[in-house]
Length: 386
Image: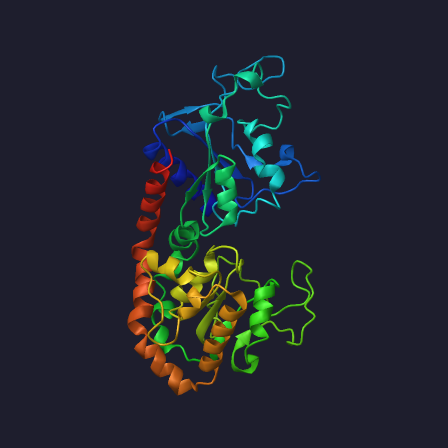
């Protein structure tokens, strides 16, 4: 089974253990988010219902989607089992404006069932008998300080937060690196670059940061056009330190390269000002035993600390995490990077030795503690809303 399929099973089992009523887990067919498919209409929302036969975790039995154990046939009016739903949006930021047709409360709340084949609802189902409060819609998500989550709450959805990428990376994506000596013996790797900034896709905050730092002192990627066709028109030379063959679920360990010979890891997350939404990017420096700076919304470092990770305020000023103004925060981050950029290799090696306790603690904590912490968080947050 693939990682997402395994996690979906783990989630469904967790739901059955915590939620005191039967519920249906809805996931997107790409496990990430809703996609427009020729028409930007809710009928084209790609929700994966899996097979008609499925394991019912709540009743601990195998069954099909229909109450009378008969698969749907247009000639037979089978009543579809209408259940409360958990819409799984764990791995991508929620955008209630971009995906308004999906989240729209009036339209969505009239459709408590996922099958788009029922144009007018399940057979024999009457709108006047439907009470939204009888079929609550929960949303599994992984973001903090988000106006989008506030919108969902206003629209009567019930959001459930959990640090999904931490679980995904620790238990699946990066699990196999734990036993590799070339990972754990990080002090044997030479320091060839003062910092690394990996930017496969063009984002304004990533570009703005590169334009504020001395790019000759580190290693960066800035493609134009990027894989999405975006064009960069600024003064920074386009560059790519690798061919971007390694996916977000991989760390390049073939020989000494920019990934494993850089001192400071600049984590430029997908979203910048609007919300805290950590992806796999934050766990690459943790696995590689590298100190990191986070380019994201205020409170990002505190968010990491709330899960037991340690940061690097002993060696530089991390007050940027509290700066609300985005320009000032970016300037503060750039100053730290430029200070690191001005150090020679010997100074960086000394710093790495001083940081050893934190680097090794984060690595161990990520693998040994985070999965249980995150699943416990999920259970507690579910119980707080059901």
